[in-house]
Amino acid sequence: MLPPGPGERFMVTIKDIAERAGVSFSTVSKALRGSPLVKEETKRRILDVARELGYQPNFAARRLVSRRSWAVGVVWPSVERTALSYLITRINAQLERLGYVTVLSINEPRSAVDVFHRFQVDAILVFDDRGERPPLDELAGYGRIPILVYGTTGRTPFPTVDVNRKQAIRLAVRHLADLGHRRLVYVGRPARYDPLQEEKIAAFRREMAALGLPCPEDAVLDTEGMAFHDGFIAMRAILARQPLPTAVIGGSFDLTRGILRAAREAGLAVPERLSVVSYDNIPLADELDSPVTAAGVPAETLAGAIAARLAALIERPDDTSGVILEPELAVRASTAPPAP
Image (cartoon, rainbow, N blue to C red):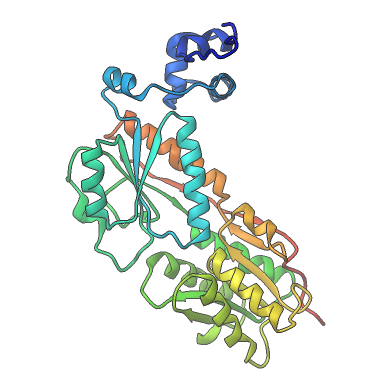
Protein backbone atom coordinates (compact mmCIF):
# COMPACT_ATOMS: atom_id res chain seq x y z
CA MET A 1 0.00 0.00 0.00
CA LEU A 2 1.45 3.34 -1.08
CA PRO A 3 1.28 6.37 1.22
CA PRO A 4 -1.26 9.05 0.23
CA GLY A 5 -0.20 11.94 -1.92
CA PRO A 6 -0.40 15.59 -0.84
CA GLY A 7 -3.89 16.44 0.35
CA GLU A 8 -5.05 12.82 -0.04
CA ARG A 9 -6.30 10.44 2.61
CA PHE A 10 -6.95 6.72 2.48
CA MET A 11 -8.98 4.41 4.69
CA VAL A 12 -6.89 1.60 6.13
CA THR A 13 -8.61 -1.76 5.88
CA ILE A 14 -8.09 -5.13 7.49
CA LYS A 15 -6.67 -6.29 4.15
CA ASP A 16 -3.95 -3.62 4.37
CA ILE A 17 -3.02 -4.79 7.86
CA ALA A 18 -2.94 -8.43 6.74
CA GLU A 19 -0.58 -7.63 3.86
CA ARG A 20 1.79 -5.61 6.06
CA ALA A 21 1.77 -8.19 8.91
CA GLY A 22 2.10 -11.16 6.55
CA VAL A 23 -0.95 -12.98 7.90
CA SER A 24 -4.38 -13.89 6.62
CA PHE A 25 -7.41 -11.62 6.56
CA SER A 26 -9.22 -13.86 9.07
CA THR A 27 -6.26 -13.81 11.47
CA VAL A 28 -6.31 -10.01 11.51
CA SER A 29 -10.05 -10.01 12.09
CA LYS A 30 -9.71 -12.41 15.03
CA ALA A 31 -6.76 -10.49 16.51
CA LEU A 32 -8.62 -7.17 16.40
CA ARG A 33 -11.51 -8.83 18.25
CA GLY A 34 -9.16 -10.14 20.93
CA SER A 35 -9.86 -13.77 20.02
CA PRO A 36 -7.93 -16.34 22.11
CA LEU A 37 -7.46 -18.35 18.90
CA VAL A 38 -4.60 -16.04 17.84
CA LYS A 39 -1.20 -16.41 19.49
CA GLU A 40 -0.24 -13.47 21.70
CA GLU A 41 2.93 -12.76 19.71
CA THR A 42 0.96 -12.65 16.44
CA LYS A 43 -1.76 -10.56 18.06
CA ARG A 44 0.78 -8.00 19.29
CA ARG A 45 2.37 -7.78 15.82
CA ILE A 46 -1.01 -7.22 14.18
CA LEU A 47 -2.02 -4.55 16.71
CA ASP A 48 1.33 -2.79 16.26
CA VAL A 49 0.83 -2.73 12.48
CA ALA A 50 -2.74 -1.47 12.91
CA ARG A 51 -1.52 1.43 15.06
CA GLU A 52 1.32 2.16 12.66
CA LEU A 53 -1.08 2.39 9.72
CA GLY A 54 -3.58 4.46 11.70
CA TYR A 55 -6.34 1.88 11.40
CA GLN A 56 -9.79 3.13 12.50
CA PRO A 57 -12.51 0.46 12.64
CA ASN A 58 -15.67 1.16 10.68
CA PHE A 59 -18.18 0.47 13.45
CA ALA A 60 -21.24 0.71 11.25
CA ALA A 61 -19.88 -1.86 8.80
CA ARG A 62 -18.66 -4.12 11.59
CA ARG A 63 -22.04 -4.03 13.25
CA LEU A 64 -23.83 -5.01 10.06
CA VAL A 65 -21.48 -7.95 9.53
CA SER A 66 -21.06 -9.14 13.13
CA ARG A 67 -24.34 -7.93 14.67
CA ARG A 68 -22.32 -6.33 17.44
CA SER A 69 -21.98 -2.76 18.65
CA TRP A 70 -18.27 -3.10 19.49
CA ALA A 71 -19.00 -1.16 22.68
CA VAL A 72 -18.63 -2.15 26.34
CA GLY A 73 -20.66 -0.48 29.09
CA VAL A 74 -18.93 0.20 32.41
CA VAL A 75 -20.81 0.83 35.68
CA TRP A 76 -18.24 3.00 37.43
CA PRO A 77 -18.50 3.53 41.20
CA SER A 78 -16.71 6.82 41.72
CA VAL A 79 -15.05 9.70 39.93
CA GLU A 80 -13.09 10.54 43.10
CA ARG A 81 -10.79 7.56 43.65
CA THR A 82 -7.39 7.94 41.99
CA ALA A 83 -6.68 4.22 41.73
CA LEU A 84 -10.05 3.49 40.12
CA SER A 85 -9.64 6.38 37.69
CA TYR A 86 -6.21 5.08 36.69
CA LEU A 87 -7.58 1.54 36.33
CA ILE A 88 -10.52 2.51 34.11
CA THR A 89 -8.14 4.52 31.92
CA ARG A 90 -5.99 1.42 31.42
CA ILE A 91 -9.03 -0.81 30.83
CA ASN A 92 -10.25 1.61 28.18
CA ALA A 93 -6.83 1.50 26.49
CA GLN A 94 -6.81 -2.30 26.55
CA LEU A 95 -10.33 -2.52 25.13
CA GLU A 96 -9.45 0.01 22.45
CA ARG A 97 -6.57 -2.25 21.41
CA LEU A 98 -9.15 -5.02 20.98
CA GLY A 99 -11.35 -2.79 18.82
CA TYR A 100 -13.97 -1.77 21.42
CA VAL A 101 -15.17 1.61 22.64
CA THR A 102 -16.13 2.21 26.28
CA VAL A 103 -19.31 3.81 27.57
CA LEU A 104 -19.20 4.89 31.24
CA SER A 105 -22.06 5.34 33.70
CA ILE A 106 -21.92 6.35 37.38
CA ASN A 107 -25.61 5.58 37.90
CA GLU A 108 -26.84 2.76 40.10
CA PRO A 109 -26.44 -0.64 38.38
CA ARG A 110 -30.07 -1.19 37.32
CA SER A 111 -30.34 2.28 35.80
CA ALA A 112 -26.96 1.94 34.07
CA VAL A 113 -27.84 -1.49 32.69
CA ASP A 114 -31.12 -0.09 31.32
CA VAL A 115 -29.15 2.54 29.41
CA PHE A 116 -26.61 0.02 28.15
CA HIS A 117 -29.39 -2.19 26.82
CA ARG A 118 -30.71 0.76 24.82
CA PHE A 119 -27.20 1.27 23.43
CA GLN A 120 -27.04 -2.48 22.73
CA VAL A 121 -23.50 -2.81 24.07
CA ASP A 122 -21.79 -6.18 23.73
CA ALA A 123 -20.94 -6.60 27.43
CA ILE A 124 -21.21 -4.75 30.74
CA LEU A 125 -18.48 -4.36 33.35
CA VAL A 126 -19.69 -3.59 36.87
CA PHE A 127 -17.36 -2.28 39.57
CA ASP A 128 -18.80 -3.54 42.83
CA ASP A 129 -17.12 -0.96 45.04
CA ARG A 130 -20.06 0.58 46.92
CA GLY A 131 -21.16 -1.63 49.78
CA GLU A 132 -24.24 0.44 50.56
CA ARG A 133 -26.07 -0.10 47.27
CA PRO A 134 -28.55 -2.94 46.56
CA PRO A 135 -27.02 -6.35 45.77
CA LEU A 136 -26.18 -7.15 42.18
CA ASP A 137 -28.38 -10.25 42.33
CA GLU A 138 -31.27 -8.06 41.15
CA LEU A 139 -29.63 -7.92 37.72
CA ALA A 140 -29.58 -11.71 37.34
CA GLY A 141 -31.66 -12.81 34.37
CA TYR A 142 -32.18 -9.21 33.25
CA GLY A 143 -31.60 -8.92 29.53
CA ARG A 144 -29.24 -10.92 27.35
CA ILE A 145 -26.10 -8.80 27.55
CA PRO A 146 -23.33 -10.62 29.47
CA ILE A 147 -22.19 -8.95 32.71
CA LEU A 148 -18.71 -9.15 34.25
CA VAL A 149 -18.18 -7.96 37.83
CA TYR A 150 -14.95 -6.70 39.34
CA GLY A 151 -14.55 -7.08 43.08
CA THR A 152 -17.11 -9.55 44.45
CA THR A 153 -15.89 -13.12 44.08
CA GLY A 154 -18.35 -15.42 45.87
CA ARG A 155 -20.97 -12.69 46.35
CA THR A 156 -22.55 -12.45 42.89
CA PRO A 157 -24.13 -14.79 40.33
CA PHE A 158 -22.05 -13.23 37.55
CA PRO A 159 -18.56 -14.12 36.32
CA THR A 160 -15.94 -12.04 38.11
CA VAL A 161 -12.41 -10.74 37.97
CA ASP A 162 -11.08 -10.16 41.46
CA VAL A 163 -7.84 -9.77 43.37
CA ASN A 164 -6.54 -11.55 46.45
CA ARG A 165 -6.76 -8.55 48.78
CA LYS A 166 -6.04 -10.66 51.84
CA GLN A 167 -2.71 -11.74 50.41
CA ALA A 168 -1.84 -8.15 49.52
CA ILE A 169 -2.25 -7.10 53.16
CA ARG A 170 -0.30 -10.15 54.33
CA LEU A 171 2.57 -9.12 52.07
CA ALA A 172 2.50 -5.60 53.53
CA VAL A 173 2.48 -6.79 57.16
CA ARG A 174 5.23 -9.37 56.57
CA HIS A 175 7.41 -6.83 54.80
CA LEU A 176 7.18 -4.42 57.74
CA ALA A 177 7.68 -7.21 60.28
CA ASP A 178 10.77 -8.44 58.43
CA LEU A 179 12.17 -4.91 58.68
CA GLY A 180 11.74 -5.10 62.46
CA HIS A 181 8.51 -3.15 62.98
CA ARG A 182 6.19 -4.20 65.81
CA ARG A 183 3.89 -1.21 66.27
CA LEU A 184 1.76 -1.19 63.10
CA VAL A 185 -1.57 0.49 62.38
CA TYR A 186 -3.98 0.08 59.49
CA VAL A 187 -5.93 3.04 58.11
CA GLY A 188 -9.07 2.26 56.14
CA ARG A 189 -12.35 1.30 57.78
CA PRO A 190 -14.91 3.59 56.08
CA ALA A 191 -18.04 4.73 57.87
CA ARG A 192 -20.27 2.83 55.43
CA TYR A 193 -19.82 -0.93 55.48
CA ASP A 194 -17.65 -2.09 52.61
CA PRO A 195 -16.99 -5.85 52.30
CA LEU A 196 -13.88 -5.27 50.19
CA GLN A 197 -12.30 -3.12 52.91
CA GLU A 198 -13.39 -5.55 55.63
CA GLU A 199 -11.43 -8.27 53.82
CA LYS A 200 -8.27 -6.19 54.18
CA ILE A 201 -8.89 -5.41 57.86
CA ALA A 202 -9.51 -9.07 58.70
CA ALA A 203 -6.31 -10.05 56.90
CA PHE A 204 -4.36 -7.37 58.80
CA ARG A 205 -5.54 -8.67 62.18
CA ARG A 206 -4.94 -12.32 61.27
CA GLU A 207 -1.42 -11.69 59.99
CA MET A 208 -0.50 -9.58 63.02
CA ALA A 209 -1.68 -12.42 65.27
CA ALA A 210 0.14 -15.04 63.20
CA LEU A 211 3.39 -13.09 63.59
CA GLY A 212 2.88 -12.50 67.31
CA LEU A 213 2.59 -8.73 66.88
CA PRO A 214 0.35 -6.63 69.15
CA CYS A 215 -2.94 -5.73 67.49
CA PRO A 216 -5.26 -3.86 69.90
CA GLU A 217 -8.68 -2.66 68.77
CA ASP A 218 -7.34 0.79 67.89
CA ALA A 219 -4.71 -0.68 65.56
CA VAL A 220 -7.35 -0.23 62.84
CA LEU A 221 -8.41 3.40 62.33
CA ASP A 222 -11.89 4.33 61.21
CA THR A 223 -12.23 6.81 58.35
CA GLU A 224 -15.20 8.64 56.89
CA GLY A 225 -14.24 7.41 53.42
CA MET A 226 -11.24 6.30 51.39
CA ALA A 227 -10.12 9.70 50.07
CA PHE A 228 -7.05 11.92 50.59
CA HIS A 229 -8.71 14.00 53.31
CA ASP A 230 -9.73 10.87 55.23
CA GLY A 231 -6.13 9.66 55.29
CA PHE A 232 -4.93 13.09 56.41
CA ILE A 233 -7.40 13.20 59.34
CA ALA A 234 -6.55 9.63 60.36
CA MET A 235 -2.83 10.40 60.39
CA ARG A 236 -3.45 13.48 62.53
CA ALA A 237 -5.16 11.19 65.06
CA ILE A 238 -2.20 8.80 64.94
CA LEU A 239 0.21 11.64 65.67
CA ALA A 240 -1.57 12.25 68.99
CA ARG A 241 -0.70 8.76 70.21
CA GLN A 242 2.07 7.76 72.56
CA PRO A 243 4.04 5.82 71.70
CA LEU A 244 3.76 6.48 67.99
CA PRO A 245 3.48 3.48 65.67
CA THR A 246 6.57 2.92 63.57
CA ALA A 247 4.64 1.85 60.46
CA VAL A 248 1.29 2.58 58.80
CA ILE A 249 -0.57 0.64 56.12
CA GLY A 250 -3.00 2.72 54.04
CA GLY A 251 -6.05 0.91 52.69
CA SER A 252 -6.02 2.89 49.42
CA PHE A 253 -3.70 5.08 47.38
CA ASP A 254 -5.66 8.22 48.27
CA LEU A 255 -5.61 7.43 51.99
CA THR A 256 -1.85 6.95 51.74
CA ARG A 257 -1.41 10.33 50.07
CA GLY A 258 -3.22 11.93 53.02
CA ILE A 259 -1.10 9.98 55.50
CA LEU A 260 2.10 11.20 53.86
CA ARG A 261 0.91 14.82 53.80
CA ALA A 262 0.04 14.81 57.52
CA ALA A 263 3.35 13.17 58.42
CA ARG A 264 5.27 15.73 56.39
CA GLU A 265 3.42 18.66 57.96
CA ALA A 266 4.23 17.25 61.41
CA GLY A 267 7.91 16.93 60.54
CA LEU A 268 7.76 13.12 60.78
CA ALA A 269 10.32 11.87 58.28
CA VAL A 270 9.41 8.94 55.99
CA PRO A 271 10.88 6.34 56.26
CA GLU A 272 13.36 7.38 58.98
CA ARG A 273 10.70 7.75 61.67
CA LEU A 274 7.65 6.24 59.97
CA SER A 275 7.39 3.52 57.32
CA VAL A 276 4.36 3.63 55.02
CA VAL A 277 2.85 0.94 52.78
CA SER A 278 -0.10 1.54 50.46
CA TYR A 279 -2.73 -0.77 49.05
CA ASP A 280 -3.27 -0.13 45.29
CA ASN A 281 -0.32 -1.04 43.11
CA ILE A 282 -0.37 1.78 40.57
CA PRO A 283 2.61 3.57 38.95
CA LEU A 284 1.53 6.85 40.58
CA ALA A 285 2.85 5.48 43.89
CA ASP A 286 6.35 5.88 42.48
CA GLU A 287 5.74 9.56 41.69
CA LEU A 288 4.94 10.83 45.19
CA ASP A 289 7.41 12.94 47.21
CA SER A 290 8.25 9.72 49.07
CA PRO A 291 7.89 6.89 46.51
CA VAL A 292 5.57 4.47 48.31
CA THR A 293 5.93 0.75 48.82
CA ALA A 294 2.67 -0.72 47.51
CA ALA A 295 0.87 -4.06 47.73
CA GLY A 296 -1.63 -5.25 45.16
CA VAL A 297 -2.05 -6.49 41.62
CA PRO A 298 -0.26 -4.13 39.20
CA ALA A 299 -2.89 -1.97 37.52
CA GLU A 300 -1.73 -2.87 34.01
CA THR A 301 -2.03 -6.59 34.81
CA LEU A 302 -5.48 -6.08 36.28
CA ALA A 303 -6.68 -3.99 33.33
CA GLY A 304 -5.39 -6.58 30.87
CA ALA A 305 -7.15 -9.41 32.71
CA ILE A 306 -10.46 -7.51 32.80
CA ALA A 307 -10.29 -6.59 29.11
CA ALA A 308 -9.39 -10.14 28.11
CA ARG A 309 -12.18 -11.63 30.22
CA LEU A 310 -14.71 -9.21 28.68
CA ALA A 311 -13.60 -10.15 25.17
CA ALA A 312 -13.87 -13.85 26.03
CA LEU A 313 -17.29 -13.35 27.62
CA ILE A 314 -18.56 -11.67 24.45
CA GLU A 315 -17.39 -14.68 22.44
CA ARG A 316 -18.70 -17.22 24.98
CA PRO A 317 -21.51 -15.69 27.10
CA ASP A 318 -22.23 -19.01 28.82
CA ASP A 319 -18.73 -19.22 30.31
CA THR A 320 -19.27 -18.05 33.91
CA SER A 321 -15.77 -18.85 35.17
CA GLY A 322 -14.00 -16.25 37.27
CA VAL A 323 -10.44 -14.99 37.60
CA ILE A 324 -8.60 -14.23 40.85
CA LEU A 325 -5.30 -12.39 40.48
CA GLU A 326 -2.43 -12.65 42.93
CA PRO A 327 -0.84 -9.44 44.28
CA GLU A 328 2.75 -8.29 44.29
CA LEU A 329 4.73 -6.07 46.67
CA ALA A 330 6.54 -3.17 45.00
CA VAL A 331 9.18 -2.04 47.50
CA ARG A 332 10.11 1.63 47.28
CA ALA A 333 11.66 4.32 49.45
CA SER A 334 8.85 4.67 52.02
CA THR A 335 9.83 1.66 54.12
CA ALA A 336 12.95 1.01 56.22
CA PRO A 337 13.86 -0.58 59.57
CA PRO A 338 12.49 1.35 62.57
CA ALA A 339 14.67 3.95 64.21
CA PRO A 340 16.62 2.58 67.20
